[in-house]
Figure 1 (cartoon, rainbow, N blue to C red):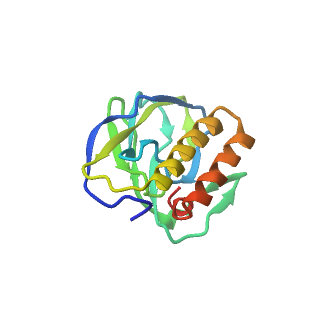
Figure 2 (figure 1 turned 90 degrees about the horizontal axis):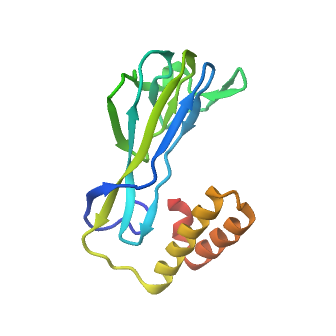
Length: 175
């Protein structure tokens, strides 16, 4: 189930950090899992919210992928092989796509025009929290490391990641 995800988690809102993503012809996002945002030990994201802002382009589908595969490198891009694509979502202006962070997916190559999406996370709150002081500190280090990493301070982030994983080894598997 993941690090300290036991208990009942209920949705309560959206991550206040919204991203606007622009893809130009040839742009793509290789196979990946979306990362979780931990506000604190009892509030975190578990699902992705993508809102498609336009649809006047070709390509650029969101593809959900089989977990059991070897990625292929084609035209200097890591992509899933066609036989490993389980489902394709063709973006249309104004539509939203919600899915679990732990589903492997990719943004396929955009063929023409420009594609815009708006992205955030659906936040969940744990109803009952049972976490010790060491785990709380490890999660705080993790949150700080994620902020530092986003700001390009990778060396400081790496130090905090190491501290978090030393305090709570199970956390490394969950990130």
